[in-house]
Every structure is written in C-alpha cells, then in structure tokens.
Image 1: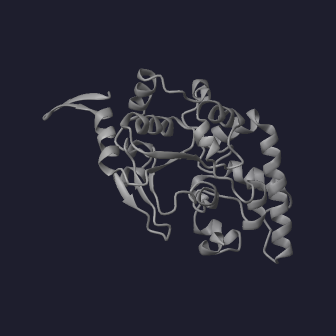
Image 2: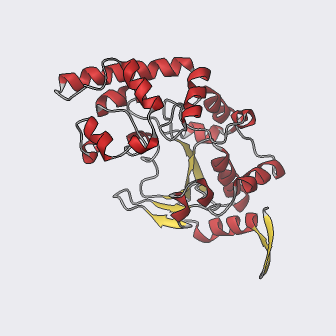
Image 3: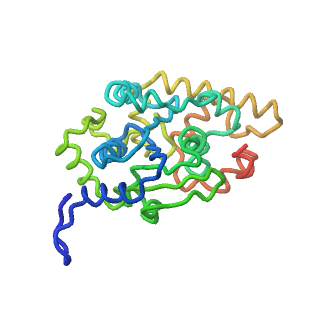
Length: 268
C-alpha cells in the first residue's frame, strides 16, 4: 500500500519519494534513466510531480521489444528524443566480444544501458524487492568507476503492488506487454530471463532469434580467426541451444574458461 500505518503514524510513500527528489535535486537537474518499464515510468512521473528539473533518456539496446519502442515513442517523446544510440548493435557486439552475453559477464548491459549520465545525478527505478543483489542497494549511491555518476532510487523500498497502485491511481501510461502476463520488460532473450521466458521470446519474436543465431555464427568465425577454441560448438545454432538451455549454475568461472577468455578480457 502506498499509505501505511506505522508506530510513527501514517507514511505516504508518494510524498516520501517526492520529498527525496526535492531534497537531493542538483542545480543542473536530474538525469532520468528511462527504460520504458513500469518502474521507470513511475519515477519519471514522480519527477514531474516533484517539480524538479530533469531530462529523461532512453538507452537504445537494439534488442528491446518492438512494442516497447512504439510505446516509448508514443507516450514518452522526450525520453525518445534524448535517446542514447549505441555505436554498434547487439549483432555486432557479440562477435566483437567473441562470447555470448551471460549472467556473469553481462557486457551487453554495460555497453547498452550503463554508459549514459556521466557526471550526473541519475534517477532510477531500482527497488529492493527485485533481487537479492538489489536488496543491498541504498537510497543514494556513488558510482565506483570513473564516470562521476551518483544515483538516487526514490522508490527503492516500494513493492511491485505499490508500483501498480501508483500507475492505476495516477493514470500513468505503461507498456501493454505487462497485460499479457509479463512481470518484467527488457531485452529480447536477456541472459537474466528464465528458460520459459526465453522460449516465449523466441516464439513471439522469431526474427530476433534468427538474428542471434547469425550473430553467434559470426562469433564462432571470429573465434576461429583469432585462434580461440570452439570445441563445444560447430554452428550458431549450437551456441543458441546452449545459451537458451544451460542451467544457471553453469554460469561461473568454468564457463569463462570455456570461451578462452579471462573475466577482464570481456570488458575490452
């Protein structure tokens, strides 16, 4: 519930989030990292209600669902106008990295989603409930890299039901893919998606699945040209089957050695 009774009286989560944004507002305004997902739609609406200065940016991944792209263009034209275009597509990045993106080596997120907002105070829709890793995040954070970014997550303690209550209460536009039963909306065949979700993605967007297979074939060709082992696979289809069907426990250091790469090499 967005309004809860506590030992200290009623807490209005919307007012708390708005006050957080007002309290930390930087002189140049916030950089809103907008993905088109339900959480980022809520934080963008909160920025509007807070009356703070901001600019919203959508990071193009080249593998987002077409329905999501259409939704952003229609309902969030400012974020679309300020979109961050990558220099290469996913289909070019995979051969360049010479390995598929995995949960442990998520170079795709790093390249497509985490480059924007350098030197800015970035607003995100990160919530504790989303994962064990995000449960450790704090309201405000400073990037440990060299980007100079700071982060604020104004709805960090909200539940998923809080997010939907806000959307329906304030009539916030959201992507209708959620109405089809999808819990999260992101890249097609994201390495973080469960096997059932990947199977559904392949059925709904078969052309994207074929593009992945072609990219994996070019990846194999690049590995052979560079003298790296390819014993586990002969074709892009082989890579695709392994990528879709592997178990999560396989996604560790042994997997990296399979590619003939060290972890730090995947960052090049």
